[in-house]
Length: 600
Image (cartoon, rainbow, N blue to C red; front, side, top):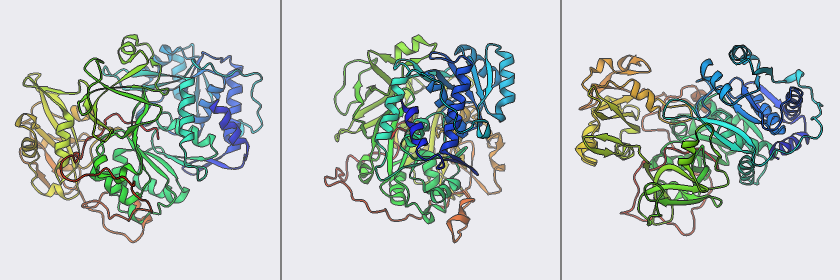
């Protein structure tokens, strides 16, 4: 079992630091002691296989890992109830939502830390069947606490974790993962670690979700983990140097912000072995710049919460511009089929269809939603909900989402196609397209864009650009320009928020356009310029003044005009049989999946 492998690795050198967070350094002995003490505490309270234990702590706390390990040693189910797991831990569920989840999951024990103790008390009042216990940590954990005798191995088909992902109704979908699936995932990740020595993993997204099995694999292999509460480009660059980070998982906008940070070209990146990125579409031109800056350490992953990793672009693939618009090739253990509508027969190469996958890392389904489970999981196959096709090289290309269309005037418009057109404009850094119903309930095309610094000073006819690239029917009725597009901290465009601040009347006054609830014109003191044909204004970016050292620049965080200078790649060679061709066949700058979650 993966937890026992982690305990064995921790036991080899109890004084070794295995987790860094802010100014806290956690030794192997301290983490192992907390795991054993928590296991003994839960066992004394009657927790056994089949029971469900909830965990509620501050964001990305080291004891989050220890609490889950203790639950899994007992063969019980672990569920983190602070937040929607793919999102930031700072966006917490309400007490009412947490209480409902505790009831729905029949939670018997709620593990809390000191800063969550008050919330835990409130929850136990609302759900009396739940007992709140404080996770033993530090001196309270001890260092030689023995595990309870005769702990059975978890059943392979037992439920290991429940993760939450957003549902169309606003209620979280509860994704169930079995123990055999968890073991498979951690083992695959551990097997894929670089053989040059123990890894140092930096996690800037919640350790309760995508990076959780990555951390498990690293700790089981004798490595260490660096925890940040959230993403900050300057802090990440500092961690690369300070901790000798070898592995990091980033959402695509995180990668962009590292590229644009003025300290990036001055930072010592020599320790990096792998930058895994996923979560949102990645523009090939931006990825090519990342290769120039970081060298041959980039791995792009396409996957979903329900499936785990599906396909990837490896570092050598990143040397071929023709491949950068693709989602790569399937992992060896994953079977992928492109099927006709409704899961029909497989379609021919080059024809777009529904992406179905079969893999040992696929989850067990959705708890409490048999109808959805039956629709998505069929006969050992998972319908990802994505559309795609195989290109001439056998690489997977993503074409959008099933049903993710804007219905306007009898036409079905694909947001991804409009985003792709906008991203071709030389002044557009990022773009998100979404539908907004007007006062007559007719769905209209809206777009939000982030421009390169300084671009907001000039008129930029993005609506006309889309009309020329596609058709007049694809033209957004409104284009809003943001200093930074609002994102969920997992890196996905926050379309729900963009809809909420987009007026249903496209002729609304620019004076009422807002960013983060504030008028656009008041976000900065910079001059503003109207986007031609649009009803909102652009906020001009502010270039960052140069500075002589990377350390001095990291706090600035603002992008420079045109992006940062680039360093030369670090000693790598492209494949001997390059697949790049010139002319026809070059892929657009925005042809990657919306639903990428990292499994390297």
